[in-house]
Length: 537
Picture 1 (spheres, rainbow, N blue to C red):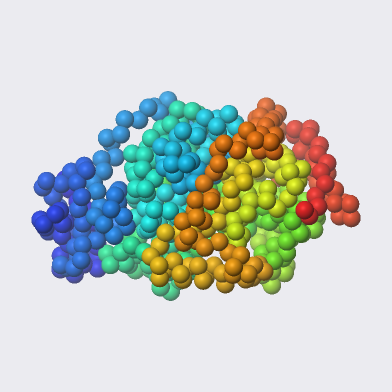
Picture 2 (picture 1 turned 45 degrees about the vertical axis):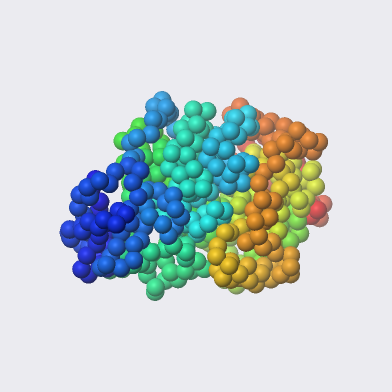
C-alpha cells in the first residue's frame, strides 16, 4: 500500500517501520514524503521514523490499538458494510439533541454498549446524539478532550468499526449523529505532531497549551490536517455533523479563517452526499460572526452553543454567585436569556470587568444550542453534581419545560431525562506524575468557586469514573420514572405543536416579578403561555 506523510521537519529521511523491516519514503514537495510499502495492508501495524530516530505513530493514524505511543494500524475505510443507504439526515432546526459520553453511557462503556441503549433514546423522542470526543486519548478512561491521535477512534471504546456500528445503528433507528471534535489544542501525552512539522504556534497559548499553527509558516499543512480530518468523520464514518470545541481558542488571522474553510468543505460535501451536514461551534465570545454567512463577513457555522442560557437559569435557581455565575442571578437576566440566548450583548460584565459581547441582531433561534445541563457545566463542579442534586424535583420539572419550549435547539445530557443519580465529575487515566498535576490544578481552579480541595473529586481515582456510569435500572424507580415521563411528554409536545420548535428571537415574550420570583413566558407562534416560579433551592 502507499504511505504518505507530511513531515517537513525530517531533514534526511522518513522510514516506514513494519516489524524489523524499514522502507524509505521518497521526498516530495512542501515537506511531503510517500512510497509504496510492500507487505503492508489492512490490519497491519507500522510506525514512522524520522531521520533514523524513534518510531512514532502516524499523525493520520486511523487506529491505535496499542495506545497513543504504540504503532498505527492500517484501516480500509471502504471495508465496512453500511446499511444506512436510505438515511437522509436530520433537520437541526427541529431537533432535540442528546449529549453522551461513550465510556459512561452504558455499563460496557463501549460503542457497542451504547447501541444497546439506543431504543431508549428513540422512545424518549430525541433526534440526534452528540458524542463527546472519541479520538484516541491516553489511558482507558477520560473525557476525550486530551486526544492526541485525532484520526483514530478510541480503541477502548471499540475502535473504528465500533464507531461505524454505532453510527449505522443510530441511522437505522432514525437518529442522527454529531461528533465533538477538538481542533484548538492537542493533549500532552503521546503528542508527537511537533516532531513531524510546525503543527503548533508557541506565540499563542491557552489553558490547554500551545495553539495549532493556523496562520504562520507551514500552516497550510496544519490546516489540511484539520480539514481532511473533518472530511474523514463526515464521509468515512457517516456522522451528520461536528461540534467544534472552543472555537474562540482558534487563533487565525488568515484572509480565510479555518472555520470558513471548514464550512465551505461541509457545504460541498453535503451536496455530494445528498444529505444535510452540520457544524456547531462552542464559543464564549457572544459574537455573531461565527454563525453569519461568509458573504456577510462570517464563518458560516450552522449554530453555536450558548452557555449563558444555562448560567442565567442555574444562578437564578441555585443562588450561586461564584466564578462566572457572578454575572447572573436576577430574573431579568434570565428573561433576556430566554428571549435571545445571549445575556451579555455589548454590556458591562462584572465578572470580566469589561464590556462584553454583541447583540444577536438578525440571528435565528435555530442558530443557538442551549442546555440546562451539559458535560462542562456538571463537570465544572467539584463533585460533578447534576442540577437534580441541587434543586427540588418541582424546579427540575420547570427547567425541563423552559428548555423544551425554547425557540433554540435544546440539548439534553445523558440521564438528565430521568434525573439520574450519578454525578459526572472530571476523570482521567494518566501516569502518576501528570495525574497529580491535574489533581492539584483542579483543586486550585475550584478554589475560585469556593470549594475546598478535599471536596474536589480525584480525577485519577478509578472510583470517580465508576461512579459516573449511568444506572439504567433506576429509570423505573419512584421519582425517576415520573421525570422520564415528563421529558417524553415535553419532547412529544414540542414535536406535535406548530411553532414550538426553533423560531425567530422576537417570538418570545417574557415578564418577571423579581420580588415574587415569578416568570411569565409566551411563545407567540405556538400560542403557548407559561407561568413558573424560579427560586433558589
